[in-house]
Image (spheres, helix red, strand yellow):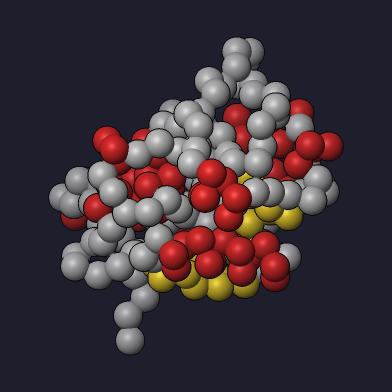
Length: 209
């Protein structure tokens, strides 16, 4: 749901590896008919269609490729439709007006607030620590990207991990959904370092040993 740079980048990883220009896809297979609204009014534009093979593999998975405020509103507006579905939150609740803090209160996260807005959904935090360009490129610094996955539903996390692995990524189980607090803070720091490092949004968070 949503197909800006991040949404298309995630789509590029959950479909067979080809150039983005040659892809068709959606990041909300199995979620047709959801009410798409934006804060302040207006509708999120519908995504393109997806091929049958991938749609079958991802049936019942909804990727909220939306800014946090919009994702929370869409989750609340569609709580009944999302009940039982795996909902992947990729947002980072950064205060883009100041770029100096997160907009969620201490002790919570965007993912947890989305889960509260749609209590029947199987919410998973994933893909929020990867920039769109590195997802499309398939690597950063010559190494596959790590995808940190947090959630309270083991089956939902495994499904997202399987999709990430199939796309050439290395899924890492980060623990329960409350670990999204650290993942969002980690990526906020990563974002603020882009100018300092001069990496131009092409860096990645990677665990090495």
